[in-house]
Image (cartoon, rainbow over all chains, first blue to last red; front, side, top):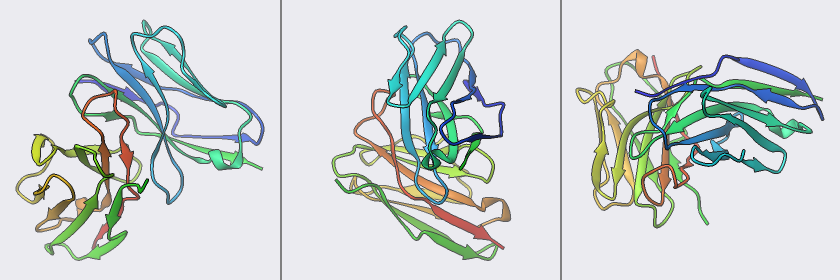
Length: 113
Length: 115
């Protein structure tokens, strides 16, 4: 079974700074998908960014980018120029084939004005 | 485009009572998911439907939880009887099809408190 580990339960950073959230996972599969989801307080979860394991190039979405290290099974999320609206729970997730989406325990990120 | 709708948003019941949650997925989405999110944890899949058929219910406590998606559109999740440990947020999500290629869209969730 696949496992996803987020070792930072909470983080905080000043507005406009850059922050990196860590995620590691364990799998024996070769082709899979990795995701970062954002869950703002009292609001619904939305997809931030997705990475296909067969792609060597790291995914980017505006201020959000990932550092995907397949051999190390590491998938970190970098948020540049952080904004107050980035305050949320962030979940790393793994998906292989038709199996279920497996989430980590989340990192609570607070952006300080 | 309307998102995933869920109701109610909040529910408080006593243990041993019954409760039902409703979900209406995004129009045209064949795959529907119910997740349980306990405070401080990531969502855990309870059941996945493809149209009106069950794809995965391996983590659904079938002695007390049931779910249906009769016409392949909206779905209900029922707990009967509820236990204290069922206190959680119940999330519904939908995607065009199953698999990692297809983004899952989440509803706002139903926060259940069992006293």
